[in-house]
Image (cartoon, rainbow, N blue to C red; front, side, top):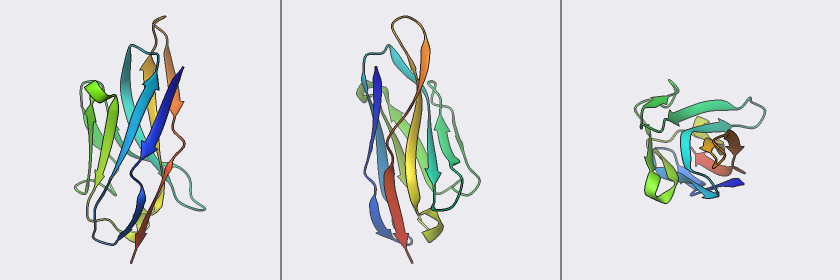
Length: 120
């Protein structure tokens, strides 16, 4: 079983910075591709940033140049550093990951989400 726990959300003024983390725990061989999504009230969940097991990254156009995704495999943790935050970045941020299990199967797991609120 694999669990993802997000942390680091909170409130920040526009122009500020915040880093959210996603830590995996449980029984697995490795955590592969990890994706941050976000969902604002009344809107669909959208991809924010993704990092592969080889640390290849890609970003949504709306956050490119402001957000940075990174990973620390020793800590089974992926970070999303968010700079120059805007009120439109306000959302619940979710972590999604593929985990390779000991039976060589891969499962997809979601975290519970962390709220990020940016005030103008």
